[in-house]
Image (cartoon, rainbow, N blue to C red):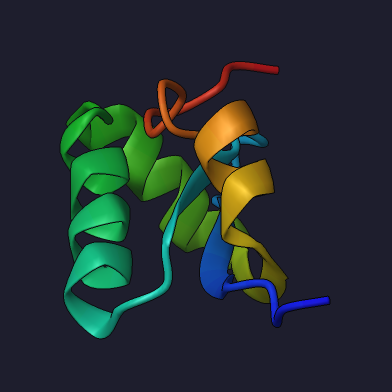
Length: 80
């Protein structure tokens, strides 16, 4: 049986609870956080800063075939 190709993805969860799955490279993660921040108005940004809310990033190794089948068309924010 041959070795299956894996891929590392990042699951990004900002303070508002939306979720994004992207390939786990530094630029992609940075861009996803920036897109999230750009989607907020000044009042929302102030509220998150005042509450000191934080999000997180989880790195996941999975089979590339699973990523292509599940997330390939879903590389955008998924609302809760």
